[in-house]
Every structure is written in structure tokens, then in C-alpha cells.
Amino acid sequence: MNRMTAEECRKAIEDLAPQISRYADLIVRKGVAVQPGQEVVVQVPVERADFARLLVERAYAAGAGHVTVMWRDDAMTRLEYENVELSYFQHAPEWKVTLLNSMAEKGAAFIFIDGDDPSALKGIDPAKPAAASKATNAECRTYREGMDFGRNAWTAAGVPVAAWARQVFPDVSEDEAIYRLWKAILETARSAGDDPQQAWEEHNAAFSKKKRFLNDYAFDRLHYTSKNGTDLTLGLNPGHVWEGGSGRTVGGTVFFPNIPTEEVFTTPNRMRADGIVYSALPLAHAGQIVRDFWLRFENGAVVDYDAAQGKDVLRHILETDENAVRLGECALISKNTPIRETGILFYDTLYDENASCHLALGIGFPECIEGGFDMDREALLAHGVNQSATHVDFMIGSDDLNVTGITAEGEEVPIFVNGQWVWENE
Image 1 (cartoon, rainbow, N blue to C red):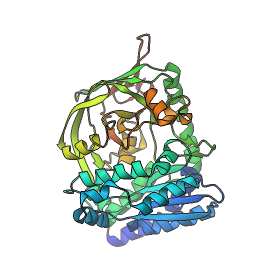
Image 2: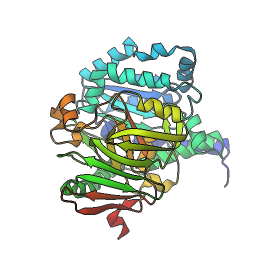
Image 3: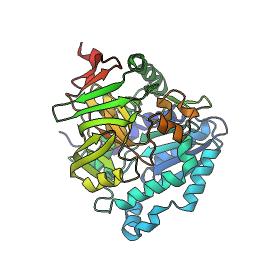
Image 4: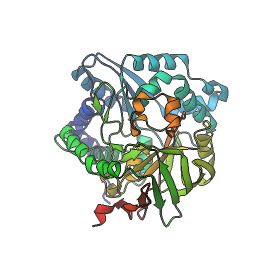
């Protein structure tokens, strides 16, 4: 492999400037579909202040009334966890509760820019970030429900930071790693061409066949098997709906929650998961990494688990609250996707979950059941949709994964064969 010099890297990233600008426009105009006069909140790593400025510029160009930027910094976060007692993190700071809830009440659009060191909190007591996450979800209820119940548009997208780039591309210089990660982000987000917004319209249309196939069958349950030991049956809810691609707020705004996205997904019945499932990729969570883990389910709940690395992190996820041991999502993604075909392990759930079939522990999606946006949390629970203060995706899509749909009458229909949609094997 020919290594790039620092000057070559600088020039190469300069040459990406038009693509990066179009990417920012995509996030603003398609990701959250900024409306005239709307409040916009951007959460972004301080290391990418250059991209934050670009996003703010594009948001105002799209008609935003005001943009608020919330900065993140891995080093500062680590210092806080190293020096502050656990009890502090058991409640969200008042300023944060006020800011997020008030912005949600005003109908703000939320942009979350991923760009973190996957190992930033290695060695930190996982109870602290777990407590902080739980407190934010519990106390910023208007903010969380605004996104969960379709009242606020939101999107998550990525930008490279040095520590993340070094983890993904450890065999090249930091400058070259950042360039390579920029390239990968733009390509997987379909933003390397001249018209990313049109590319996303076409991409969105491609979800229709998959959703129609799954929704027409209205399967009673799914059976997952793989040579790695996975043998799991998930029950689905009566009236469940498979979604994917764009979302829609209750006010009618069409937006894309994830850039990139390759998944079709639904919410399984919270009481109907039985069997064992093995991870296919590492889980990067709260600045720490969990590798080679498995979960055993009975009557919908995790009853046993283990991990080669990060078992304590997994334990804190499962102990978030009483329903964190139950599933809120099952998602299907073919191994024949741009992200998977890069061969890159991103160590970032936004990317890795879109390269692999996955499940998620914690809260389910109201939009994945008929009439869900009109239900409160108790009604959703009664309809089998899990409620929790967490939602953690983990990847299970091995190359030989088979998924069979089983109807209420017992008919078995192949959905995935060897890690891809059944029709991709024809």
C-alpha cells in the first residue's frame, strides 16, 4: 500500500470540499428537512467545528429561524467521569433538561453528528455513562418523546475525528486515516456524487419492495439461525408494521433519521423472544467496546449472557431499568450493501448497524404498530411494544444468517438465506 504524505492528505481533503458541502446540505434538507423559521439543534464533536460551521450555514440557507450548537469533546467527557462521583450522573443537569425539553416543545429539528473515539472511556466505570444516559432519557422526557412519537424531525450522521479514524485505519498516518474515513463516510452516505439529495430519493424508493413483502405476509414470528450458534425465535405483534428509509412526523415532514440507512425494521413483541443469539460485530457503546458476546432469551427477557470483552458494559445496559432486558427492534439488512461491501469495521453503531442485521435492547418504536403514534406508553406496552430508558443496537448479521418468517397458520417462508434477501440468492 502506498502511503500518502501529509501534503497529499491535505490536498485530497481539500478536493473533497464540494462533496462535504453537499453532504451538509443533505443532512439539513433531507436528514431533518429544515422548515422556514424552525429551531435547529446540532450536537457535534468540537474537533469538527469546521463541519459544524458548515452545517449552521446550510441550515440558515434552508430557512432555519435559529440554530443552537451543543459541543461534545471526548477528552473533557473522560475528565468528568474520572473526577466526578457517580451520584452526580444520576440526574441530568438542569440546563440540559431545560434546553432539550424547551427546544422539543418549540418543534426543533435535532441533528446528531457522530464522531467519537470508540475507546474514549476505556477503563472508566461503566456505571457512570450508563447513569448519565438513563438520567437524560428519563428527565428530558419531552425531548425523548418528541422524537419517539414523531413530533420532532431528527437525523444522525457522521464526521471523522482523529481517534476514530486511527481505530478504523490503524496502519496509516493520522492524516491519511482522516482522509480515508471522510471518503468512506461520503460514499456510504451516497454523498460522493453530484446530487446526493436525488440519490436519496432513489434510495428511499428501493425500500418499498422489502417493506411490502414483509407487511403483506404479516408474520407471526421470525426464526434466526446461524452456524455461530444463533438460534432465536422472535414473536411479532398483531398489527406490526415494517418501516425503513424515510420517516414522517405527525405534522407531515418527511425526514431521514439515519444517514446512512440500509435497514427495514419493526418492533417485536416484548414478551416473545426465546433462544440464543451471538454478536457478529463488536458493539461500541458509551466510549467502550464489547466483543464476542451472546444473549440468551426466555419469554422475551435476557436470562443469561457473556462477552469476551466488555461484559460489565453489557451488564450496565441490561440493568438500565426493568425493561432493558427486552427487545425493542429487529432490523434486516442484506450483506450486499455499500457499507458491508467496503469491508470496513467502523466501530460506530450508526455505520455498523447498517452493515448487518441487528436487534436492539430497550424501547420500541410507536410507528411500528398500527396507530402507535396515538397511543401512550401504557397502551404501547399492552400492545407488546417495549418501553425503556435505553435503546442499544447490536449486530447479529453473520454471512450465513438465515431468517425464516412463520405465519399464524404455520407456513414457513424464507426471508434471508446466507445473509441476504431470499431473492438475492436467485
